[in-house]
Amino acid sequence: MKWWAHELCSLLVVLALLRDPLQAPLAAAGAVLPDVVERVVGARHRAMHELALYVALVALSAPAGLLALSLAALDHVLTDALTVRGVTAFGWRLRGPLSTENTVHNLLAVALHYAVAALLAP
Image 1 (tube, rainbow, N blue to C red):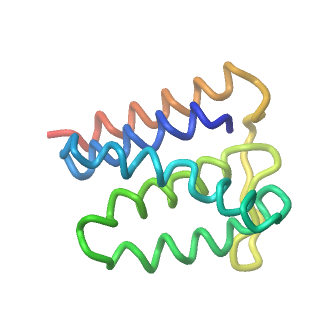
Image 2: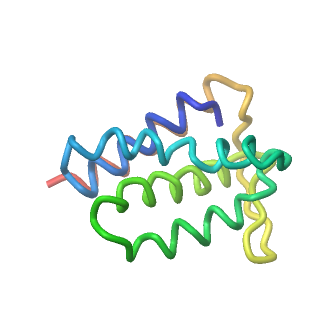
């Protein structure tokens, strides 16, 4: 998915779950964290998603300040799993029908997140 789609998707989920708009900056950072870490360490794209998934899952038990960051990073990996290229996590290949390069597919991912956020909202 494109960065803008990751940002919107993660913001929708984090705000729906935490119901705290002050968490938006951490959600925005977490939304792109897996890709940023890959660039910093020079890993190929999605090569570290398994590590990102593990860290995000462990961090869910972290202090409340890191919860938005962790949820957004986890959502990034799960959203990438919706794409044709998918992600490999713990020996499993997870992938869906969406194309990262297709704007309509990115919008579909955002719409799916919006629907989930609406279901989670009070």
